Image 1 (cartoon, rainbow, N blue to C red):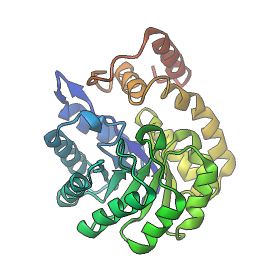
Image 2 (spheres, rainbow, N blue to C red):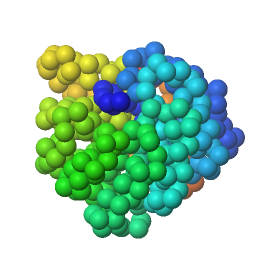
Image 3 (tube, helix red, strand yellow):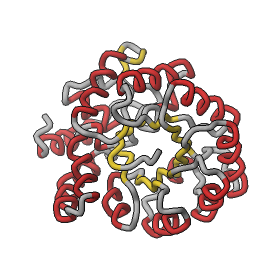
Length: 292
């Protein structure tokens, strides 16, 4: 399984304190109809940090059921506890996910050897395509290209990485350290096109929650060699990428989806509503794209 193109880092809708299954199923259906290349439930954008284990499993089950094999599902299954990550990855496999997205352990601040042992333990315990997720800005640790190259050599089920370093120098080293079939996916919408230009395979996108078709077309244009069209879409979407990070993700994107009428803007503490100033800036960005 190679993950490529525009994969949406799905928002999780809530209503009255619970997962809003109807809104979630409708949202997934719209994403698929718009042409996204994959779905990623229970990541950062899906507020995985405040889902109970039961909710986490249910959100993944709903996504797999609704997708019904039409696009791959890369299920969030990471933890800073290796044993828990193994349990979550086993659940993803049992539920029928096409792969598991595994955050680098946060807060613990493991060494590179610790990172290697963490991911190798998961790969040895669960026979499922695995995609580590490297986001130093949130986790406090950075999995270096040499560590990833070692893992890929030793663990054939590690098939990709979500690179949210925002660092094209590291991205280039990562691509060079891994085989051509390996999927380096941008974890930042800002760097989706630049990373693809040096050998990346796509993006796990926040902006695709609100403009799935445009993000999919950007990836399609690049893969088909229509570079001018890909660049045009990149520049068109760039102000939206900026708006999605006016405050901590997923506060702006969930607010945007509420303004678009796709779900409630309900979030769980410690996330809270977008500030008034940022709300006006978000509305202006959405108006400029004719989204509201």
